[in-house]
Length: 330
Image 1: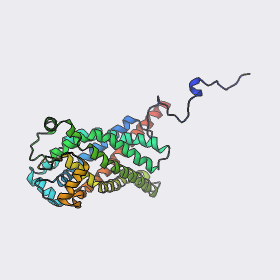
Image 2 (image 1 turned 90 degrees about the vertical axis):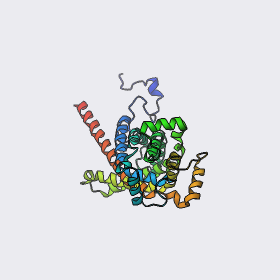
Image 3 (image 1 turned 135 degrees about the vertical axis):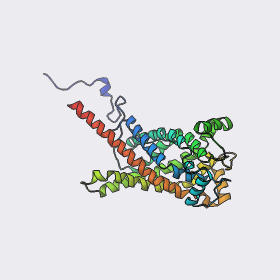
Image 4 (image 1 turned 180 degrees about the vertical axis):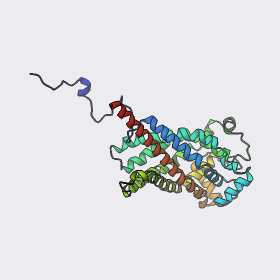
């Protein structure tokens, strides 16, 4: 008698249904491929950092004070005025932007693609899992900081290079390599990771929660129209909160990356504790919060720009994937 039951092959017999098919393309919770996430993240990171670069320059000058032209405890407007008048005009606010351009795109490509991939893995089908968002953010920053830290160091030295006279990105790279060695490019990596781990944990948890809350408030009829505003608002809130919480470690990172530049202190062992003690000894505990206002002024709009650009990129690729699927079916 004929039967529809087929004898399972050995591979099918022992296959665990919970295992991922390693031959299938890796996709995120949104159904996007890894390379699509990388492109969306790269564009978002580049747009964010280029748009906010002058604010980042002010923050760097305020945090890296040694015997630089700026005096301690200056306001943002005073710092801005001093940078422009002492370093050749408004162009000084964009010194180092080439290094940022080289580093931001690749770093954010890694950052967002790893975050989405880890979020898919750790959330186990629950898109509201805050712990998964935090852990995924930490994993993403460890990898992306390894890509970005060298160019971030070059960028900050160029921002302060009025007295040192670096001739550009490659001149700075060559001089640092010959005078200080390759390790100088990663002098702040440990501090950067220690700073960015809580930063990204707070950032992604806040962003996902704020986005979820704002979407629930939006009416069904206007959800599509308000999507850009939702991402921008959630991103701004996440960026501001995370920036405020992690400012002390950002000050330490800037001091390590800019030591010896423009009269900034040099540290014997480069440990976080050594730098913290030096800052507190010179400026007191308020020195650990130096630059927090421009840091928040940077990260709030930067995160708004970044997330709205990133989500727009994801929407583009989702539409592209849907159109391809429709044409395949037809």
